[in-house]
Length: 115
Ligand code: 2BA
Image 1 (cartoon, rainbow, N blue to C red):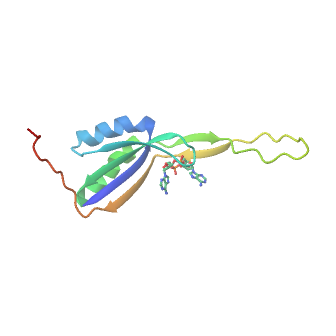
Image 2: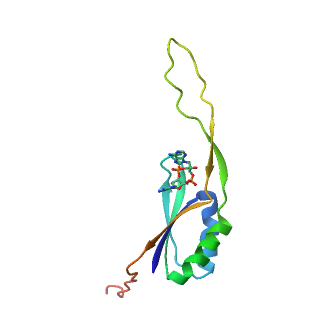
């Protein structure tokens, strides 16, 4: 059994979740934020049998795209009033950052509703 943790871009998350659930996988969506860009992204938790991992990664690959972003680094400390306009730095974000972890056990505890 594996726990797949996939960090994906927000723009891709909706279609990806739809495709995963249509293929019969259970998915939890968590709103998250990247430490570098400080922008919202989406983290998905997917518990799956070992044989399901490759098909799941295929679906992730098919629905997540690489996008180019430009980040303006902080300007260097200016001496004697000189001004250095920061040059934007190109950053490639995504398709997806995926962690595949061994999961000892996955249980759905389903006690009935309290009376
Ligand atoms: P962010 O941390 O906001 O990073 C966005 C993009 O900025 C990264 O894209 C990468 O191209 C660049 N980047 C990040 N840290 C950098 C650094 N120290 N120096 C230079 N460039 C840097 P991705 O690699 O596709 O990552 C997309 C998002 O996936 C990340 O958003 C973060 O939320 C997550 N992520 C990526 N690697 C991770 C890791 N090793 N552990 C945990 N989360 C990770």
